[in-house]
Length: 546
Ligand SMILES: Nc1ncnc2c1ncn2[C@@H]1O[C@H](COP(=O)(O)OP(=O)(O)OP(=O)(O)O)[C@@H](O)[C@H]1O
Image (tube, rainbow, N blue to C red):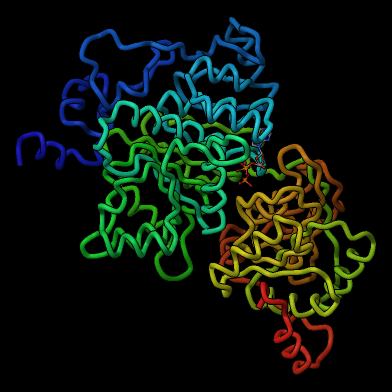
């Protein structure tokens, strides 16, 4: 162990005053020794990792706060402020990079790979950037650490994937052939379904097609699924050698990290993205919580160059505090109001009396005008099974997705719903976050959500990417304690809500926490007392829903 190693070990976790000790900090490669990146002095991504031989590093133009807004040059801070205000972009932090509003501009100022831009503008058909993309993409391309909060369905995935892909491509360009040392970026998602969806979007951005056939893959992107875990178990750390980007749930990666000896190393990770960050900060009810798992991942991503980004549709004070304490010169980007539901969703609450009333109300809703696809949220896997048994009896094209189904069954259910083969998908909180089903027309909260945050994510499955949607939330007397806070969210989104709901007693923080942890006890979902009949119906389920 040399002098530098000892210094690094003793100094681990300490914050450096970079200005005063910049030389020392850089010499021992401490995390906080990264040079802060003034916008006025463009910093090429590459310079972080490979010291230039001389000072003639190619400087590309990086948009500053004075740069383009909506295709024109905005010369003054005032114009930039006006543009941010117009798009409801709020930023906290120093040296804030300017916003970029067209993909063409992004390509010219940041030399984004052509295949990616082609995929976005031609394959995906996107014309302009969404507000979160306008601010977060330039910020991440500058190598800034970011805490981003933007509404559901506002394009956060592309906002973090594009800079990650760009960074990895740049790094691979300077890496010598045959020196593949493993993945450079790690994306964490709370569920397998969301991780898979992120993989698909990443593949769309990095695959070039010629005549409808895949012609080239810019990067090797992998999902840490069961087969990959098996490979790691057999081959060990070297299995990651050919990977460039890894997407995983915290559970899967921690499984490999905690193996004795560890089966994976995160030392090479230079970009870490935590999607649905507030979810991953939640304390678990049992077993190892997401929070503990995340802690393990952070500690293992110990590359001095690592840059972290947190994205979510909902804001959590805990996450903000963590970021302010642990991230380097963090930039906080918020689009619109914090913790609000999207205005593109017409929202209503419906009193249904009791459990039987819910089934009646649901049937009524469906009879009034059946416009699939529809998502129905219930509070537990048992209730998902019960409701499925009730509705399949009505002969509707229906499926259910919950934790008791195998990974393959869950995948199949998602695939069928995406293709339009299933009209109604019953799901638990598992599908509440992040999942992007195109054109869901209606979200029904059959069971009242346990928090305003859960409500915002659930109704955000509709009304995405500028489309309109509708959400109906059933409630009974048991749901009164949470009524007020969700009524407030609905009002904030510009929908009508009975005045009395807003005047109900506010539950204390303790009560709110208890409500979020303990589900409301509800009677079973059953239209007839004939249990035997129900059992028969379960046996007769279609294959995909068995
Ligand atoms: N610039 C854009 N123009 C048009 N559509 C876009 C653009 N960027 C992304 N989208 C589309 O918007 C939809 C929602 O994007 P995405 O899933 O990234 O949302 P999100 O903000 O992550 O939502 P959530 O908080 O629910 O996870 C997707 O179908 C995506 O293809």
